Image (tube, rainbow, N blue to C red; front, side, top):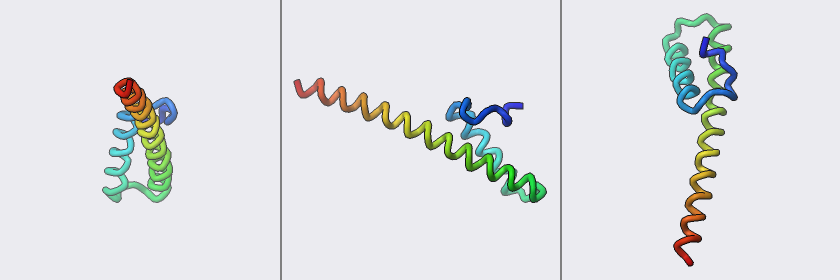
Length: 74
């Protein structure tokens, strides 16, 4: 099952999709307590994965922007 795929191996889109589905499940109120806690824990991990991937992308864009700025200053 894709949901059990290692979080560190998920792309941003995969992690965000799983997080969206978990939120929907939690909001439905249909999960038993233990499953809700597990879903919440996985949601926290997925959120951290999304944040890490966004940070990496931001750093890459910053580097590209700095390089472009340096090139235009010459």
